[in-house]
Image 1 (cartoon, rainbow, N blue to C red):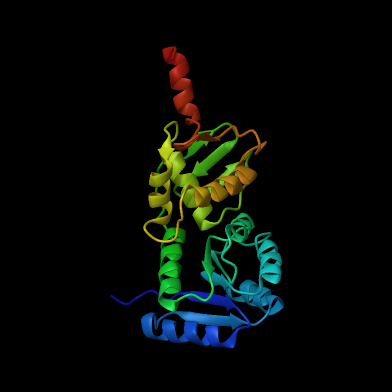
Image 2 (image 1 turned 60 degrees about the vertical axis):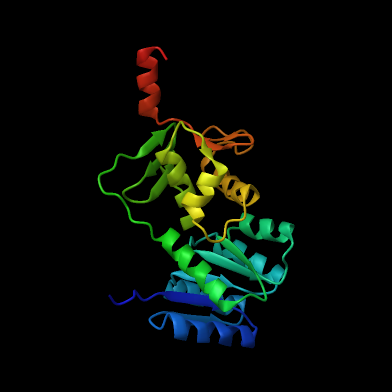
Length: 243
């Protein structure tokens, strides 16, 4: 079977790293295409024109963070942030701004390729036709269309954010332990533990909760995991049974 073609955009001004990525893709994924931008302005233009399947953002931290913030105003493209800073606070900051993964440079190109493949798999999950949506309060998750609305307004989620919400919605009313969430959303690649997961929960709450500091839908069971409030139909059924 012929491999599917993918279009990647790399925003980086380091020629040696760009060449290493190009060589790795040519050897490992010859059907894929790689666009390269050397600065943020060129990157934004190519993002708008080409609509890549995934973005690799590797500008210096200050410029990279500003660019990521701007990208997330209009696009939910999967983003891997590449940075020379491996400190936890830098990783958290990048994830909070909207990155789906964070890789410390210098890094092996084969490791980077594995993370790209994993993120593409997560972002291209198959929709399930005719499956009833999850609805509670003003929150609606449409599994068939992979869409989320709050009070009837569409909510823009990244592929990873949607996958996390989807797993919780499919287990609504039940606590999903940290390790199970990490496995279901990130698989065996990339996720670094509950602190990593906490960043994405924080991002989701900012998008779906009326008051993120006092969540109504996405709830925490300290030391255990997270859970999503039961669907409205479940709540009505419980009231009718006197539960």
